[in-house]
Length: 297
Length: 308
Image (tube, rainbow over all chains, first blue to last red; front, side, top):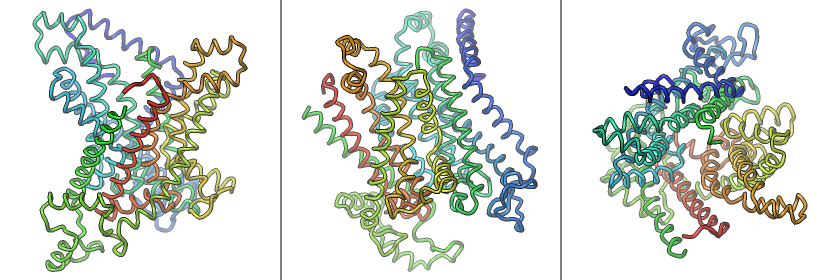
């Protein structure tokens, strides 16, 4: 929302009042939606855990205790230990950091690629637009996860590569959304008005068209976050995501499920964490969508 | 109509070629090579041995030639030998594993469609009552939670707490239950959501009112008049459903140790088995593209208002 407010700060005072009231109305509706509020609170908590992981984790995530492998939860190790004798709770706490980082960071990349391409394509039209829509169609035909897995296997595991892989595949949806919005808005009278007043191409797009196209983009981003978190978990699950020893929930489920018969706790706790995170973001995203655009449902 | 069908079928060719090209280039950009020694940290193979291996696999030719050869052979179903399972051709592996994935996928899709429609209809009929909440929450969990996480919960619930089903394997129909459910929940949730929304719309339509007004009972109104129309938007979902089931099978097959194509794909990924990876991607791609086409055509058949 902070980013949105900056983009919205148009010199004309009246516009600012109207726009900020849209966001304020949205915030009010969002606060009234209990499920979304609960989801939002969990998301904030997860972010805090991710930021303060160093203080919260009782042990470093790499500290092994080879005398106590695969131990069930006890007072000393609240969630037990893993196959290398590392404290599961500490690893879960650091895992939150990876999930949040991927969820938020990948969306920044997706927006930075997708919005300009979509906006230019919708505004300029012509040959570039045709080429882009064709390209988007081909990308859509490719199952997204299959493509991400391919890219990851080419780049190798690692956090930076996950950003790149999600960025490369994720911008398509947002570009499509932005393009549709810009196409509709550029025909409106106020854009004609601004153009008549002498506004140039960049100013028209940045100050008049994009702020009005922002709502669906914000909604797409809120749904893109859990999508990215899911992608990271899935990649790490099959072993092409985060490099060990950095813990990631998906990787912990992937490794733990091999021992599920004997040591259930190894994969159950990270599974619960992934489920809660995904559900919270979904509730929050649904709330944001309903709050910003009550017409959609 | 015929013209549309023909042009759609012809469009398959460039789409598949583009997929093949992307896969081919991505695979060749990978740092690892099949010429590297198999064991980690071992000494590199001698230059002569590398040369022989490269010649054997055709890796010494220029890239565009390699691609042309690959496409030419792929059209005939020949994907060469697997780099990892050196004694078997990729084709043999796919012929062995694809039917298993297809069986699992079809069962999951059938369950998703039947379950999703049932949940969606119940939710719409009992809007804002218990059934609605049950079906909406089930749908939300199915959509939001990744299938490998659902699989873990299913194993805990139905293998450990209630020892009804085995934790993995693929020998008897009893082994099929949990993987099918794990794979079906996500598409089922999406179908349930869509069915609910479109049923709610149709139930309020004038023709449903007419059907009620002429004295029809609730059952024929729902099944004969409402469902037929509510089903149309749901059909558009089937394309993405195939993709969801296809990519979902990687994880579900890995967890439940199902010897299908998805599990082989994950294994070939870590082994950098180029021919295997390309073959799997193309098989999935071709399958999904054809299914999308079938769904689009089906849509026209089901809804006579659509003209091509």
